[in-house]
Image 1: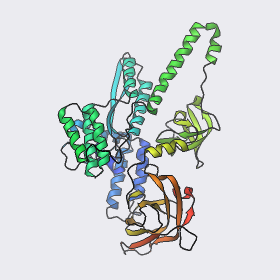
Image 2: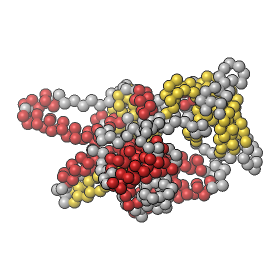
Image 3: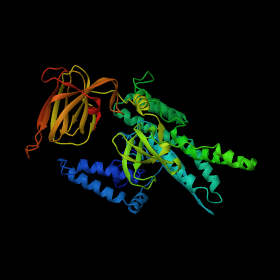
Length: 501
């Protein structure tokens, strides 16, 4: 749960680490992670000497985690102490902390506690869901905990009191103990400092100041700021994502709004008995309507076969994906939609916002640019091999290059500065086309240039021999030629073809 999940207290045998997820991942996320890892590491596709061993580790992890009973037994062996007791402030080689749910390294972690309540008659059970979260996973966990509490917390003598208390805590973003979050941020700052990313380290140390309470803690913070270059103006300063009220707060407050509306209807019915029908007729629900264009408002939305959360998942929709509403079902709670790829299914209506996602996506991509590109930065990789490719950029522009298979799937994406060379390793056998894009202000989160993005295709097909077993690693070269109409020069390519994976 903290840092590298392998052999961590929350993952003692490294099963979650093997799949690249966190201990709070749900069954669908576990299955999707297993499929991706199995494809990547299967010995039939991966020539690495460790491929067989790594593949067996993934299979064993999935065998344990896919079954709820065996997963529960495994989780019972985990120790989940608060970070203040777990993080070593003197660790000489700190590793960045990962999100407890998605397993990814987050630049702005927080240790958060969310509350769940389950009541029946004289019994009231109060549980906590706690971990180090990225902001998106914290929001999802808050919604999950509050939904469970709304459904199960009221039905005991003490249930209403503890339910309202838990819902209020979750609505405010959960509890963030000061001591634990101080050590989380200082550890993450030291980890990024060790990586040479001084700007992020300094921003994290500055965020930690809000949790410091004594001179010793402030002294530790000041030491990191000095090591990161002092209090001067940073080239990149993190924009905090931990503001108190987000869409998750709205989602959690929706049942409260429904209760308020119900109370209003009841009051009007009691006061105006003779006008009950007309009074209630004024309260209308506006579900999604057939033919509307809407977009996904959460990071990852599960498209299901039917209008129920237990139905099989047929696809995962990215944030800002634009969809067409086909129908509204279950009293407006669920919507049947059609995606841009022609896939149809059901999603909760509350996760669909009105209009196209292009505008909101543009704003979000601008806010999530990430660190500036450096020559040779690997931006995406889907498989590996044993060959090596030397690339020279003669296009006259800084470019992001993608190697694509004949069916258009991106194998590798990397950045190459104007006139520079880069050596890309682990290239597999096969036939590939090189495409590239130019522009300004690249967003790592979205994989696009935000300004003046144009794409082109290199005319030559790149062939890495697949019919020479035993030859081992071979060196190949590729030149990105200028754009033009002469033979051998790069030609324009539709952006959709560049981005389509």
